[in-house]
Amino acid sequence: MGLPPPVDATGAPRSGPPLLAGTLLTTSGLVDLLSAWATTSVDPFVVQTGEGMYLVDITGWAWLHVAIGAAVMLAGLAAATGRRGTASVALGCAALSAAVDLLLFPYAPVPALLVLGLDAAVLRLLLRHRRTGRAAGGFSGAGRPGRSSPDPPPWSPTRSD
Image (cartoon, rainbow, N blue to C red; front, top):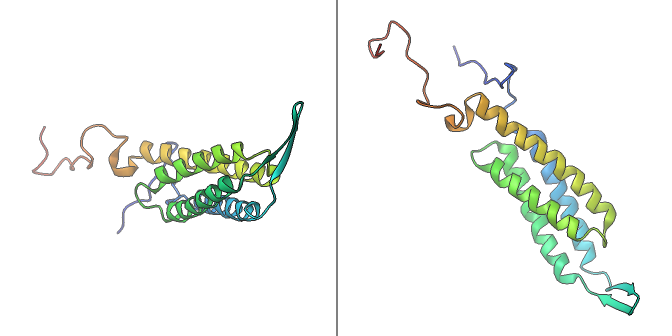
């Protein structure tokens, strides 16, 4: 006889590790990595203003974006395992990825929009996973006040009434 499956706040069974969020975050990191890698070999961008034309070289930003894409991809793989603490790391990586994609949006709008959509979905899924985990007493009992173990049965000699 095993323990009943964990349930969320509505009483529905909880799915366990956030597999969809991990998969989407891994995909987001891969798209970031590949688009940034392609940007590293591009000639400088030409920006035209009222005062003239300027060459803008974003190679350094692109290499930083490659590193962030790799970190996001690893965080997605870790989040899919469901290990303790990986959801927080994945949340941070998804937020960082979204911020960097907003900064580089003018230079690569299509991959940035794709990654921003994926990151928004990941943030929503991970925040919802954390909320349902706390409501059900998961995540090391962080959402339950007092003892982290259930009350002993009424006939138990260790019960203090």
